[in-house]
Length: 139
Image (cartoon, rainbow, N blue to C red):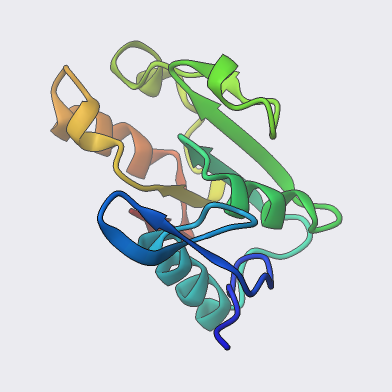
């Protein structure tokens, strides 16, 4: 039986016509589980790191919140949709330029940029600028 690498559950649900691809516990899909595999490979995040999580997935949010001493910032343009992690409002089109420079050890997001209605290149520039030189941007 397969185990979800995000939350450890062993039961699976469907996503539309795709059978058995969504974790029944944390709702993670393949893309989330692949990001978690990569985080495990990099052995991050760790205590003291700063993580910016845009449009946070429930499973990854629970994982990040379980790490003692992690500075975890879940954000979204509609923070009310993320009751599981106390997300703060961040509109990438108007707020990305105000992100602190050289600040985050990890910036992570999935299926976000296709929803950005402004200059995506500028948004990516500001996100990258807010990343420490030794940081990782996973998307």
